[in-house]
Image (tube, rainbow, N blue to C red; front, side):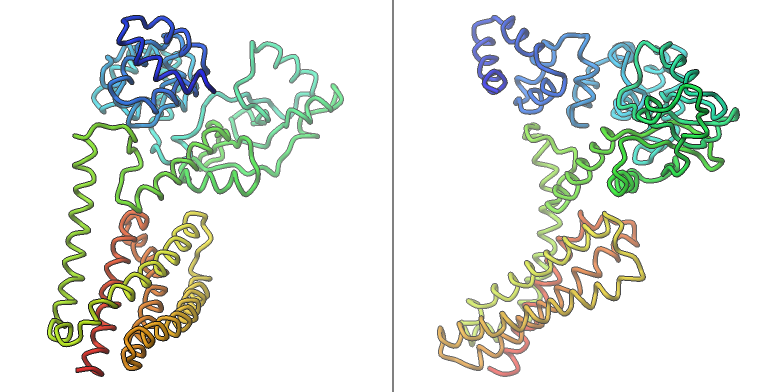
Length: 446
């Protein structure tokens, strides 16, 4: 750990002294994932230097471990032949992931520089969208027939120099490549040599359709504790397989997307990206928030006379809006998570809505009493206490309804709930909070 932690410090010293051999030695004695981690944690001025120090034999494995934005940063400096060279030896799904970071006009150039066999395998996967099972799958699979015995299978496997990574099953297919089932390696090793494959193969297998979304694939892996799974087409032909390492990447990417989208950031956001890249991205979302803030302020302006007459309203007003925003965010987060896990359907939507509304009502009543008591003691005005208590209850119930229905509505409009949900929810709870509080004050105090 100390060596890794001190690498950037040593690099800075080495650059100043003009000697980089020590850094090169330390860097290339790390595993590819650790090298990628060092690149991602390095500021831009060091990152390119570190990349040039990576052993050319490792660049492909290191590149596939990097985030999309940093991959693009390095790939944009290469020509097609260089990209084709560094992808040699990688799994097809990893090659496709790298190619998808290139400009469309450059992909044919890279494919042309590949061997015929690699090009055929890569092109077969490139026909599928990146976020589908087809885009995730690796076409390198070991298939066997059901009518051969275990001894033949074992002799067949010995012809390979090594098995594909994360091989826990062999795939059983007919002569027309129709998927029939799997032969677990454990079952293969413990079965009698003269036993036929069809006698011990597993036919109750969760095969994955090639057009299934990557999020749905991740749910299937999680639900069935899979290590690998076959990918099939409409006619049940075996096309490839998906392995757990690719599914973990999907889960991490989905988590990153949800976290960053709620702040209006891209899920390819690089922690150490340049000021010139970062500022415009964030400025756009700040502009959206400014518009919503102006809308909320417009609602307040409708009660300018009320605010002028009762100064205490200006002091208490943020409390109602803030509590509604937090309550709504809690509901919104739960619903977005439920949608991501495939748990929310039409059949249970009404129950969820009723439950969240009841929670909002109970918490609204609780904090109406708490805040009402505080305001009564603070200002010695029980009418003001009743007003803020009622406004609090109204806003928390509105927040619960909005937090539940908003992501479902956005999803139906093909808008990412994680990206747009928070800003819309905040606007709604601000407006409802301000209007209910100031509206009640205008009725009872003025």
